[in-house]
Image 1 (cartoon, helix red, strand yellow):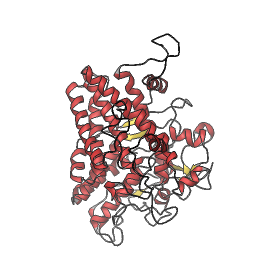
Image 2 (tube, helix red, strand yellow):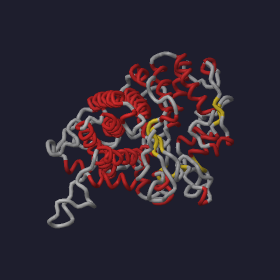
Image 3 (cartoon, helix red, strand yellow):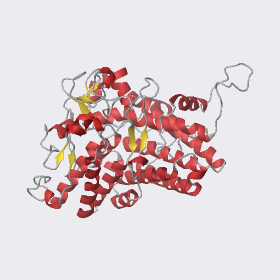
Length: 475
């Protein structure tokens, strides 16, 4: 899969190039340092970069604190950790989504379709769907059909959340048809991989709306190999290509966010009644890959971001050069497992869960440096979920215990990613599911709130909604 962070400066340059601005030289119609236009294939990297930044920065940190992955420990992060957020807290992420991704991908699609470059148009549609699917999942009703058309719709209307999801499914179908029609030979892209990414995104969004049969069907065509994952590639050149979590945790805001008392840690280290370890499971490697107890900035646990060149163990999930996942094979396998379970196919669900466990038993997404710290995920048998079995939950049927196991796997697989927050809200009222204890009060947040910039500039912005009001698909 083509990596996204391959040249941050080129991408940023093209992002700036597609914005309107006055000439810097009076009397000149063209400034070579501020091009007014660019070909579609040169604008696309800017949109890819914005998609990466959207999923890896503020959105992921806030969703992570509200999901029990992280703990806000200093300054404004203390308030955010306690579910106190203002509209201005969402200005940056809303801007990245709409100006950085929606506007730029719409421009790429129009340009590419104008010259019949269907592969480029298809990839742009997938990038747009990746961001806008997260946007509607987090905010609910959002501008989509009239977005990125300010000359025609200066105040774009808000589409119903269900309509946005339906439009994204259609957009991904278009993307698949575009890429399959043109083929890899006519494009710089690995089109087979992008098609698999599109199907996994389709499956993800069917999961969001509770259409588990359609999710299962789409996931069967989704990402089939880790080589086809959509990842944000990173390096160790500070302020150029570093992991965005690392930049925040170590370079810009050290100590603002830890993992002290984080629910995910308690699942992994035995501090919770739902502890993941059993005779067939050892979570030591995953615990230490995701989190560190070196206590650089915390009393106990924090995200594992400490690089070896500063004295840390290095190569943790949040380290300087660790690639960040956007759409992956292991998400796809876990979609198959959950969807099969919810479609009442115990045998298929167990088979897919064991596929995931085989992947993890071979190392999974955990860096090899941590494998010796406890790595075991042996296959489960049906009897393990019967009353008295090692994976059985008291008071649950075998089917419910299997689904609980799958949901816990999903929760831990999405540490640092938006999908964990999406799962918690989707299953909040279900008997089965991961149930982190709220930091304060009796409930977890259920949405992001509309950006203050959007409220000020778009007269169609709905009345303010609080963080505890569920989005329509989760009501």
